[in-house]
Image (cartoon, rainbow, N blue to C red):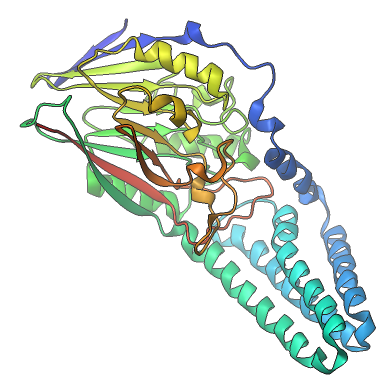
Length: 415
């Protein structure tokens, strides 16, 4: 039971590492979404000529879908190809501008998929309804492709860098009613490729907020840069700048993003405590007690749930309990315990959201049940961060209706 003392509080650490049984295979990598990322990432090694040839083939599909309408089919294919090439120019410019650094080929083909679908669907529809409406349908192709370009410009150039601070007050009868509130800042899903204006803004916000306590719930690197030395050095540079009077605590995220054999070295020697199936019990001189339960996330609710149960049994019953776990997938279990606050990320809020519908994809086994933000169930507040960075591999470096966030919680007593 290691212990750390200051003039303000004492921290004791208790481990439940012996309660973990490693899954036979990587659960997240076995899911369809990760496999789709890997398949659509193949164009990362394609030459520019091969990418151009593939775009010409896709334009030929548009031409073929409009072919029954006559010569206008060439116009439809040319319109589609022109907007696809504009996407290529935008993606090629991003690394030069220092905004994002992912491979161009995979992102280009993922971004062009909606363009292709719209162009082909309109061609087939125009053919079905009759030749007399060919020109309006061709204009519809132009208008919708232009709207797509505006959406992509917004989603690539503005929203990923519109980092904001969300705030929420949490009251717990486990904290003395008259005690000084604790200002806890939650960060998640850094997903760093390189340090950009987003990470610079992050450090500015943290300096302005001056939190008492900082917690990080995993996914430090971008999936395209997990083993890349420069990206790893940039992550370490950012983490080394984090300071808080009551400490900085972190957990590991998904195994493909935070490999267990390499990610801990990003934190070695820094002023950050990595909680790997450990609980940090902070006891303050004014009587407040805070238990931070930090779990590795294997996305295995049964196995991870057993570790959580073992950790919970190590905590003082009179303390405020805060679970740090990368994904919301333990919420059905955790709400059965008197846990005050459950902090996670992983879903990115979907990263791309549609009005009224919300997240297209959450990458969680619970689907859309827990997407983003707060959920209060049986006295437990779950807060899912939209995260800070962007996933990687073939996932476009885009956010739509889902800007990045950090969350400031004010923890206080309740009579």
